[in-house]
Image 1 (cartoon, rainbow, N blue to C red):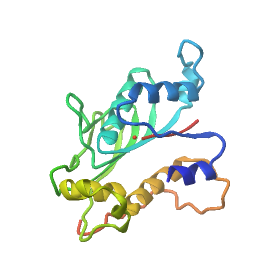
Image 2: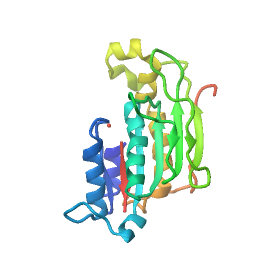
Image 3: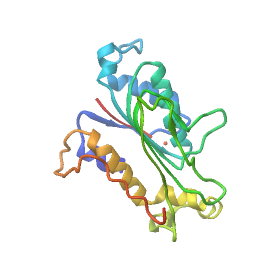
Image 4: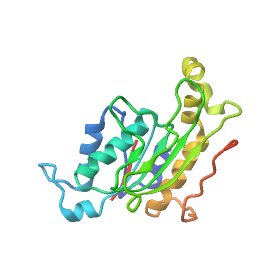
Length: 208
């Protein structure tokens, strides 16, 4: 998905992919992209113009919230966060969305040894809109999962299925696009993202 977006938005948009443990590296990259000077400081105008979109899966989804909280302390707004089957690391809080986030959405599944956060809530409902907590169900393994390790597919079946499912990443892309400039490739946008939960019921893109 990120490779496709990079081709469609070669200018004015930075798409980064970071391991969940490299929070400091991702944070410094964001500051650099926003135009920070040599000492890492941003002007009030640079902070105001920030247009940051964050998304991740599992520990990466928890890192999205941790990154948003770090940006909050720096006075930097976040336009959108997307969590996919979020699993919090020890001493991390992945369910309370900080007030510098404008919109947030959560996708999760409930099967297997590892399953995601069922609900996220805003620290300040007046500042943050939760677009939804969407349960994702699988009646059969997505074809894209066949290339994943058998251990993951056996021990954390649902967690792996939601990670490799192309449909979930199409939902992420649908959420991102209204916040991006016009792409190089021709496309049509419907405006607000259309969320379609299926069944019965590394992170980061930034535009400035």
